[in-house]
Length: 381
Image (cartoon, rainbow, N blue to C red; front, side, top):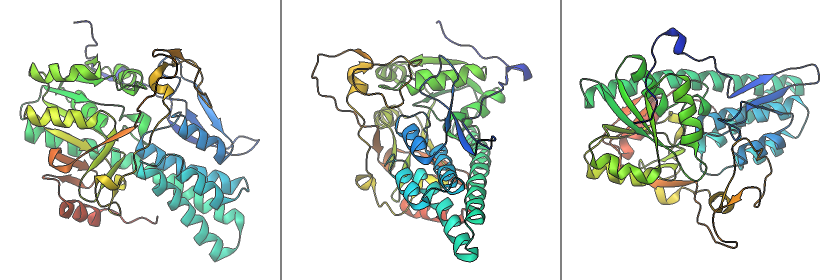
């Protein structure tokens, strides 16, 4: 089998370009992103000087992943405040850039609330801007801490469900350091298993149509020296049938109050396959992804992406900021209509467990999730 085999030792740990950071060059503060549309061909950073540039980066998927979108949204509010733009206008544009990932709005509203509170107290725009930036930096740090705790708790759950190690884990989309202030959500659990010598194989779904698995998860797995194999999404069934999957680990963009999970399209079929083949299906996400105000899966707004993402192929090294249909290689007849939901909904009865930084719930019920959120650290949104 032509695939990637594990590498161990200190030398295998990569020096990574941060997925997002705040910088203050002489010409003024900026938010710097690792442009994920250009990976794995090249590592290119995108500099955002205002909230509108950041909104476009979010929509084009230059920055993506639920936890990191929350951090990006908070930094976007701070950027507007520091540079003297209308903070509420920027906040509304950022919060609406992608509708499904709840973390984006949570991050935006947290920084916005900090800005409003300080301005009401002091009446000083500079102090209010500093408060927004402080809130964004705190959220960034908290997300890194949550990532570490999720990795620890997820690995403990695997040890409980599958004693003996040697895990063969199937994952979908990308849930590593590219979506987080830390090392990710589901990917962080697999990475923890790798570092303790318990990961036998990471099966990586390519994740059509934008190939976040092929371009991003494989990129992160290779940089960490993990044993991984890439597969087409529709090959997962044969992998289950052959008994080659011990557990499925995915992230989430929004978890409804009843435990329904919105994640990258293709997650729900994996849950069905996992249930049929008696394989644990585990969702790893921070408590900020749990939205108790959304009662069930039917209430989650699923983002519909442009049809040309399905009818055309775009090479990752080609810049996509603001790209329209016609920028890629056609793979369907001209005029073909495409169905392109960015996410699908997995009902709670198909989810073995939800792992957060505050603990795991299994079985997944509304009561268990509400209790978990009640224990989590309160934040202002």
